[in-house]
Image (cartoon, rainbow, N blue to C red; front, side):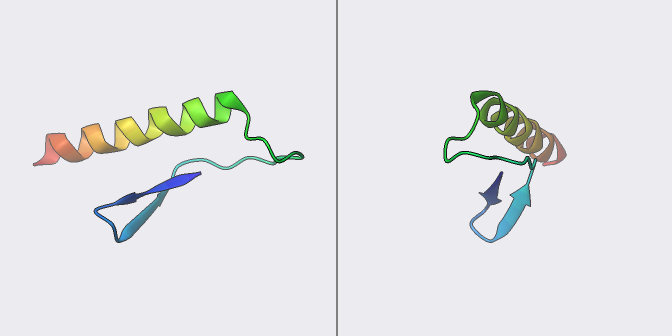
Length: 46
């Protein structure tokens, strides 16, 4: 899973093997947590 930073940089935060179409809730929560941590660290550098 990943997200964009400022529209150009793609940040990949975690990967997993999935055997169904539905993404497990715990994987979504982990990705959201890592995204928040990434942006918190970026804000602290400015």
